[in-house]
Length: 109
Image 1 (cartoon, rainbow, N blue to C red):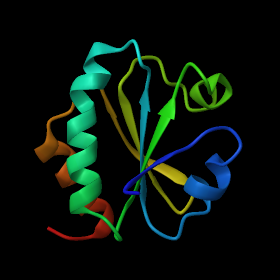
Image 2: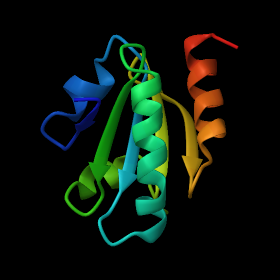
Image 3: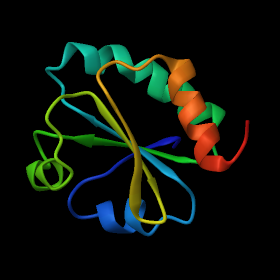
């Protein structure tokens, strides 16, 4: 599967301990902009398969993580590298902007 679901049980293992950069999409089922963002997340997951891990985190079901990372608005994309947040996009983000962020993480232009 190209996109993994992360939650409070598997977050540290899947995201913080990942050997590759991770993009986490903080979303909720009732959020309209989150639904608009979903196809972008899917396209990016396919494009960067094997190079970047793409994960989705439901904010309603994982409130401790949502608070831990100070998520105020959704969708929010957090970019992790070596267990640290190295980038953030809040609100609907065009595919090109997401691709640029991921290429920068990978050190590719």
